[in-house]
Image (tube, rainbow, N blue to C red; front, side, top):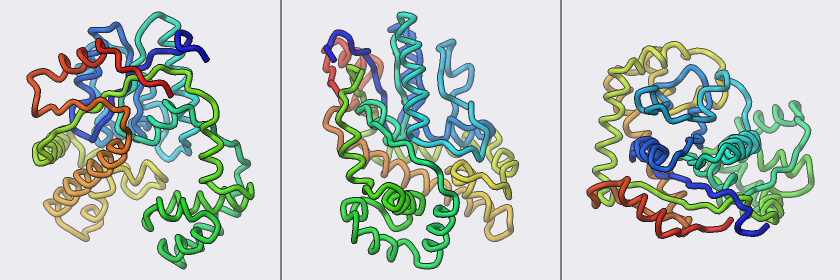
Length: 314
């Protein structure tokens, strides 16, 4: 694919509470752009506070895509996300506007930007149930040891607590005879349809980021986070039910801990999530980082990066 035929895509990434939303809206207004969310929790309806879905005021009239379209509890894969995001980006570009991808879910961002191809497999509910039962019986560490026998790369990459992805690695191998690692290698053969400029926003002083996270949690509580979480308590919510911002209050609702402890747990878990995001994005050398605590204007820095044209092909 020739360079000039590729769609120019700006991607704004970084940890939670770093200021991605404000920057994306400001850039969209500056460049005639529209925002495409790359957040695995903003896709769901019914949790706007926990997922930090931008309000109408925060969007300032800028069109936003792939937010709050899926009922809680719905199955939704990375492949589903990539297909929908591609459609949204193509639509925005076809109308002469600038697509701006924004979010902290690194797997969504990289799968889209790098044009990862996903193998369609038939669902085998019986196999999934057997693997889930096995995981619950043996535990993550033992499952990783078994996984290492046929897919050592995935076993080394996954954490013992990542139940869903460990089960998925077994599932793929047992259904296709191919490991997730082999699938991933094969999935990167097609060039990306985008000329992507990756901009990351964070804080050089990590404590300043953590302070923003703590203050954001306090603001969410003022906005009604507790009531939102209570509304989803006790329901079968699959992935969305495990969202940071809801599950931390479930022990409080069941009387296992006090509200103060639940709030502190939420702040701690959100800080840990930010660390994981920074680790993920820190591996990508294509990202142009802006340190919000070292510049007068994040928007000015972003525009400077865009003008310098540091576009990276997929």
